[in-house]
Length: 457
Image (cartoon, rainbow, N blue to C red):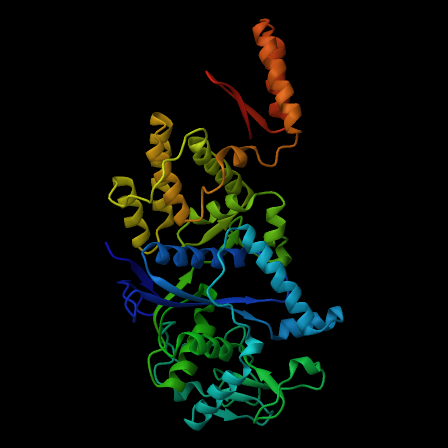
């Protein structure tokens, strides 16, 4: 079975075929780095991390580009509020991002370009659009894209120009010929710091948000590439505008497959600081380990709405522990995944069906059930190998199960020995009390013919 993915452009699930055999070129809109990453960012980063991993599993060479937007109105505002240079802020936030998403097991892309490193390419594209009559200089000094002069605008969102409205990041200014026109180059303001200004044929200024991704993707992947991804909120206007300016400049198709992940809600409500349900990745990592968060997100299909809640995270933590418990104490056989094995074939079919991670995770639990019955090294190897394609189950089971305990390990060992002595002396009341005392601090004892082991609850 070959990979099939839902293409937002055609609104159909299509068989995936890269432009260049065995080489996939993929671009994902990355972070605007003025603050710490929140769980909504984790959602899209995780979605395309899994796509990237699966393409590699299928044997493709993948050139994965995920940009950093390091010049933006919010970045300028935050730097001024803090009284620091823009570069100081963006360096700080980039390091924080790498640390936080690294804790979730999100792999580094092949390239991570920054917008400020590609201003010449942006100006070159703007110049091309102006020569083709698709861009114009406004009275206020900005350079805007003329939406109505680009045939096919609206094909990604599925609406005609007259049905579309100006999006959240498209300000309707007096200098525009049409409200849907969007800015390619922003004229500098006196109130803005010097490190937010670049020289250009249009005077000092800085690039608009939409042109950044077009220039960076084309510079690294070429004018026509395979996959472009991002959150569903970017479908319009950002991705619609990317198509217009990229195809307007190159005269050829921009992207073959558009992929968008579903929205994230918190306790079935939109995440918002005003509602008090806004969480950074760091907030959540204080209470849950990174692999639990990762597993939690993979239980929902990337295109489906995702509901974030403590109850769902607690359930995910217990479920992941069940998988590690199945692996605990079993010697894992050597060797690569045997894709001819029935469970491996089912896992592959699920992932090839538009990256259906919920079905793939169900296969992991089927294998865990078998492993609990057979304790087979081959089954353990298959479970761990399939988990690896999702970025799961790569820790030592015992270490994972015991991680984060609130009691010193040597003290736990002493209590286990004391409990064994109490049982030998038929002091079952004391033995039961020790079990209850450990359970009260999150330590679960497991008795077997080989002795007593413990794990974190």
